[in-house]
Amino acid sequence: MGSFVEGIGLLALTGFLWALVGVIFSHVSRQNIEFVSFMFVSSLINATGAWIFIFKPNYPVGGGGVVWLNMVVVMVFASLFGSLGFQLMSLAMRKGNRGVIWAVSQSAMILPLFAAVFFFNEKLGVLNWLGIILILVGLATLGIKKNATEKSINSAGGWLWMTYAVFLLVGISLALTTLPSHWKSFHDGASLRLPVIFTTSALYFMVQIIAKGKKFLTRRIFMLGLTYSAVVFLGQICLYRSLDGLAQFGRVGMVYPVAMGICVLLFSIYSVLLLKDEFKGRMLASVIGIAGGIFLLAL
Image (cartoon, rainbow, N blue to C red; front, side, top):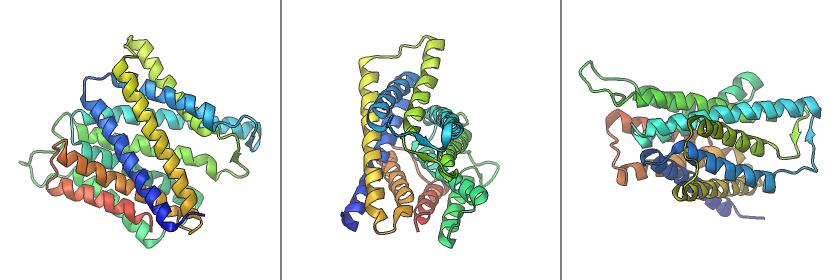
């Protein structure tokens, strides 16, 4: 039985690895790297690993054939929304403030919360609602100009509106991934959800490669895709170990918000110190509000 400190340490490591995912993603978005090919390679590696190490063919999906088929359909759509969201985020990162874009994309976790509250009658505390309000205010503040002469932070190619679209697409994807968990008598004993999600993503990007005749594999793309996949995989391992470690102390609910809050803060620091992105005035206040709101969701 692990200690509470060990669980917190794994939680912090999860947040660090998620921030590293953002670092690699940002690097690929701004460099002369074919993004679709990069995502195809990383998705294919993740799908292969998921089918080999996660899928359990001897454990049927609980709930019968219809429920199994419904789950697969939902996961396919979740993957398509997520893949489109990440593709749009890559385009936004080429034009705008990467720290802001990453913070907004991570705050999309509030949409599954809304779905759970309004459709499945789950309860949130006062501090949780305050966290949601801080996130929404932070999102809204990004798009407000003080006066007509102020230069809009969205002037460089509409990147802020792309970011809002990313928030919506990723949020819908996350909400869909949680949907089967609300079904009665459903149990994914075969651990089929992640293999379906990664396979759908690989097919989504493969279709674009074929349609556009893109070069899908170079040494650089393969190494970046492999590194990205390894960091994502390690992040998942640390996530589930921190969930298991903190479950014995009744603190499972803090895992996702705290890990995402750490992720947002670390990536914002990276964005300022190494990418030289500027955080001034409302932009800084918005990111702080979003990060603070994410932390409040853990309470």
